[in-house]
Length: 453
Image (cartoon, rainbow, N blue to C red; front, side):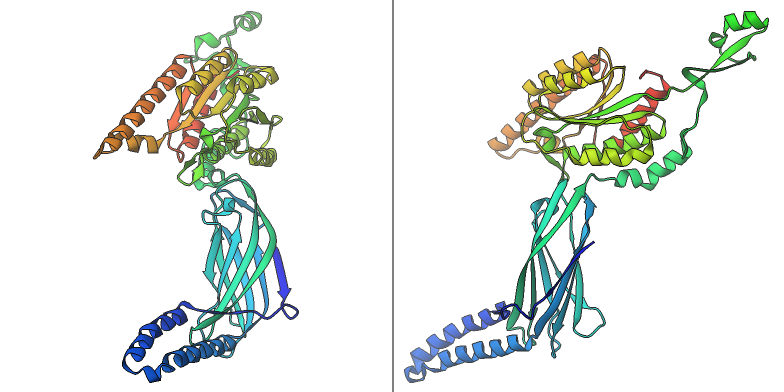
């Protein structure tokens, strides 16, 4: 946690600011002045005197608001994208009256929140002249978000004037990928109940890797009989295999323009990263090796293979480095670079999206070369906005044009997905909140079928 405490004794006097109540009362004096001027011109001095008296009362009210002695703020060092970060402000204000509660506002980088500011009320802490309050910032993008300003204001007993203070802040919050799916009780319960357990163990009787010989018993698969060993021992022996481990799993992320578009408030790339990290955690529990690969118009990040859940933080750190690139991705260069770095058959999970036929055609051609040597899973999110536009009930010619265009794009999307499936690519198309679980199911199914190695 970071904290800043500022003593204000050496700072210039804090200004008084009239409230909206004072401005409304001044506005009401205008018709009074007109009425006095029309009925009793000699008494014109009444309205200006009333205005001056109101301003004098407002100044006295602001003076009675009290003085700010010290203040402090605290923000977390780290937070995950899409998860709230709590900002706490504490202030000591010397005041003798029971005026309204003080208010605080913190300004920050837009990546930390939709409006770039958080406002909240400070409440008494129980100590004399001490107030504290908390606000929340919900980060929208990964990276470092800075807090730049803090505003404090506290009103007088009549609410006619407030005293306020603005201070420049020097603090930053590092925004990491969202790991809440990994920590979810659903996934942890699944890992406890699944074949992996909390500690990865060997699974005998399945798979293709030789484990041991055992005497053949009725009911065993006859294809497991090892005839050479049986001949040596003059008795039937069967091979016991174990499920494959040490498979290479690569999660490849398209960081281009289409993946930067938001889905339910967060960019698609962040939704993809959360789903991939959840599946990566399960793969590490299963004894496989995991790597991350990010690209846009050129390759960005490729991590070494991680082999243990204790090194999972390396994947999280690498995922935080995936940048948002408002340019079209270069699938040819990226997937060719990835293929050149892989020395054995691997499972490649590609997170991407497409918005036009040209980029989709380039992607399909690159994936076609990839499936010759590797197993590929293509993951994309359902475009709910496109579906809504296609299903809208048209009232005008513009609505008809939008619906026809959206339906055309949806059909092109279906054609591209069909082509990928014909190439032998496993395609997952689902909402962002379920793609992680769909990916885990498909990974486990592929692992059981021994299709990776």
